Image (cartoon, rainbow, N blue to C red; front, side, top):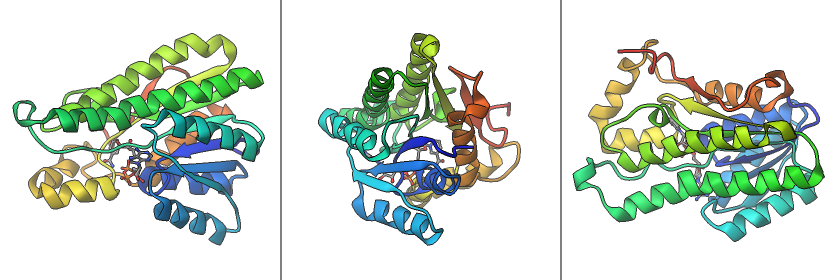
Length: 252
Ligand SMILES: NC(=O)c1ccc[n+]([C@@H]2O[C@H](COP(=O)([O-])OP(=O)(O)OC[C@H]3O[C@@H](n4cnc5c(N)ncnc54)[C@H](O)[C@@H]3O)[C@@H](O)[C@H]2O)c1
């Protein structure tokens, strides 16, 4: 799907981002991966190399405007341009009801999940417009970007913002041939969910039951959707927030 494309993926040190980087490289894309954690990025590079492919990496904090600017400059220089971007880095934040939550946690979650996506998307669109080439951007939102969820007000707010940023940019740049979409994962077996499970076992046990399929999703099941949305096969799709959630949002 992504053969020949120049692809940037953030949050690629594990979970969903890593699961997207591996097939993207395997399918012949030139890939830049970014994450705040260097050793996790190296792990992703090792997996890609073991499959006989290669990728570039850059340690990046998506909350930093200068880091993101450097990432986009390095990506364009290393890959020769930018066709597709998957803005996937995110954190879950602390688990607390609204009245018990802290401003510090709210600001941190919004900085990574919302401002991070905004900064990346802005710089990516600037690079695509400058080159005058078509582009495709995918953001990782969540089903928590489509409905409320208890105990994570900052996370829910930040993911609703990602859905809004996605739709707005899609409208703004459709006539420039830049598509912008979001994937909205349900509960997926990654480091993020493990941390939730260790701190809040009852909530985590309830998650598979809350899906129509009665199971957790795998990172590659989100990556498949993200890679499709990035690819030319989704050429008439823009501005959507696509649930990939085992039917969780479909109804109780
Ligand atoms: N796992 C789930 O159930 C689930 C459900 C819905 C949405 N999501 C979203 O999917 C995305 C990927 O999460 P995951 O489940 O693969 O978890 P994960 O923790 O395995 O991956 C998130 C990655 O983002 C990186 N990251 C965190 N802060 C960063 C920063 N400031 N700058 C750059 N990188 C940073 C982490 O180092 C990590 O490698 C997130 O946006 C998350 O909110 C996950």
